Length: 465
Image 1 (cartoon, rainbow, N blue to C red):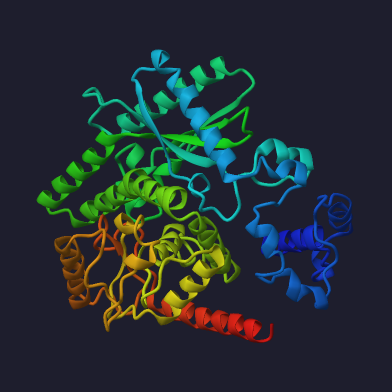
Image 2 (cartoon, rainbow, N blue to C red):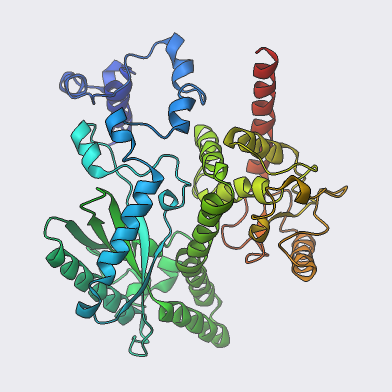
């Protein structure tokens, strides 16, 4: 059993890169299978000379910037605009099913990075992936379905989850009947498990909600493989009574003196808020920034995410959450500092992000993203000058009272020793950096070192022409 993962890695290296690492791990049959079934665009045999170029950030930067990872004939279909157009069409198709559903569909809320110009690569249609024969994994685009309010939702958590699953089953049936060629799958994180699944049964909520790993996006969902766009959308139900029920149960546990159960339910409620409320609001803010105010912000976000991923630091579980990386990039466009205007290009924005990581004093200075000032921050006349502490004394978007509230929350966090040099970004809606958390002080110092080294490399390249 201990050889399973090494053999998997050896097979993937041989198949995609032509590298034969530790030949004793691969049997002759496995090696022949990897050689004869290599994808059409697999990288050729990697040598010591080509290894540096292969894993370099700038090796294929032009293709990355132009978002063309397919042939010229297919490149126009793999764009963010095509994905957003597919989502708009999906909204119309789902709303057309209202008469067949128990409740009227109020809205569909997109929360996937690929639908706000912020994913590493534009969403790739599944039809193109199959046509190329590269058996690529296509990431589903997550969407929240909000129904009209009703007082008939059950007050029991297990019953509420079952009603949500029933809604999705009905939605899948209606959509499949209206679109026979579409591929529709309904699934749940609880399918195939017993009665010890925590919040589904209410019997062991501490086991499930005791950590922040509980993901309401995977509670119950329906995957729709859209016909016209070729994209896969993952729909889940946004149920407001669920959040209220979690908060009410947590208060009951607090009054009963059951601290462990109360902490578990509060954690579950925070996770629910993050998945259904905070992520949707963040999506709208980033989409508005990229679409209306700063078109260069999209590629800046993607370059920053690529830089983080190359250092294996992108992701909630390994370091910097996607949303935190997007806020970092948004900061340089909404609140340019040192008297500078907003970046005029994506590459300038990426360099500003590195400067922000390298030079900002995370221990003493509050880092604010003011989305309300996005419309005016791109003007050189409205660029604000940082104070000696590099904290804005006034802002175009935030009022003086709102900014004072943010500063008071930051000072209180310092008193509680919650800052301690951690990368911490706040907004008017999230004064305590609760939405996406903070990056650990150790990782923040590592990011600062990497950013300084990257800036020095950029400076050397410019000086050498």
